[in-house]
Length: 273
Image 1 (spheres, rainbow, N blue to C red):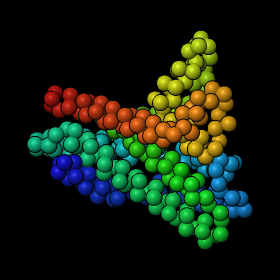
Image 2: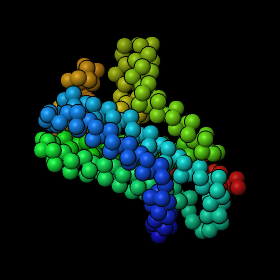
Image 3: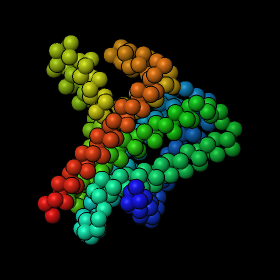
């Protein structure tokens, strides 16, 4: 536990010194405030055209930011030789990975919290109606994206040899999971037998953190009807009495499985020197 806290503390210090974090913070705040000003006369409540636009904006920005910062953090350890030095000390690989994850999560969630705090202050100053439930779901949406995509970022960083390779893979993963996902999904499911479509849709949705978190928040905002009949069962699950607990359980399993896999990759590299 002490090792995890030490690594996390070091990561937090390095994260807040990273100019990339402040660049993404400025970009996130600028676009969020721009949408607020454009829709200043509309009530921001539940699922509307305004909230749909804001969800899309967050979905485009936060995963990319998380993939960059997370993967660069691990590849920099290799390039600068920090990991070679740390591996000579009696520190467990899992403690190192968990410390990295906790430290990066604190930095990224602080950036997100600052952006939402600024958004809330300005919306209150402008006298805009901002429903508290909607505001909380937006914050949950952002936190979920950060925590899930951070595990993918650690996976990319563990396999990449340098920052340029991590950059290329991060952009490819972001494009596939966020931009190109509907096209790839429809194209692939169109080749499958009809009875396989719904089971495969469930599996692919769980495997894509962007789609998993987006579906949960859209349904909670009352926009389940826009998803189509294929997601009717999802609407029932999420709106059920244990829907939120089920969602958190899936996310927890997703994160733990990914971290253990990243730990296996680093432990394998450590044993080979």
